[in-house]
Image (tube, rainbow, N blue to C red):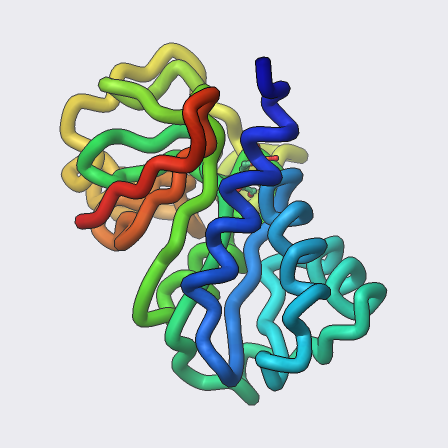
Length: 196
Ligand code: 5RP
């Protein structure tokens, strides 16, 4: 029986196949951390990485990978990151780690989004995982990331658009209009691949 961490590690290793020569975007979280560990083994192949958080930038530097600014990188071929929930249609809830806005911007600058998850993240309907919504502090005193509980997200694309329209909202952790292009899912039976 594989542990959840072992499934995350297997999917992270499988993502190496999608790493192009040049510049790569790297996400945040425990699965992304396994990916950084795997990247370290092939670091000669990549020129630099764009990090979706300070924690990821620090980890990349620690394994000897050069980290550059998104403005310096421009468009990237691939962005690799985990998710909190994902549907078969490749819509995701992300941002549980707090790196929401930066993550969404880096993902938007990549031609391909490779999502790395373990099997616990695949759902029929999203919303069990609290939906993070980053707001301008004035729009809600103190908290800048609100966790919206008790959702049943039947139309992720429409909901993403609607929440983005609310005044004071910076970003919502729904990645539906720009979902994943490839999903690598670690399961007890090995890594399964889904494509858009
Ligand atoms: C961070 C994210 C992560 O990808 C998401 O929270 C999954 O994390 P983990 O790989 O630790 O389960 O969106 O903002």
